[in-house]
Image (cartoon, rainbow, N blue to C red):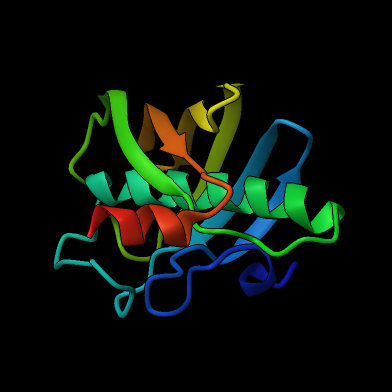
Length: 146
């Protein structure tokens, strides 16, 4: 198990993933066990819309592995939106294990990227295309926006 906090800027309680299982040049696979005390969990379990954040955090792990290989520190990225979000159920039940897959479709020269994402579970799968932005200096982007 890799130390997730060394690969991304998320911290508890917003760090939702448990483990990075696989990571290649343009893909990553992570996992999470849904527990009753997990952030966002409701009586029925974890709402599937939270899956977008799980996907985004897995993309963050992929980006973190890239910069770590270069000896750099992980940076803030932004989830811009999603397309084709498909969830045939409303919740992942408590006690369920999820496997989150992200595959890079492209990243352009402006640091805008698109990823094909999927979450597998025993109760079904959800999928989406996520659009993200990772500027070289996120703090100046945030400061300029204020």
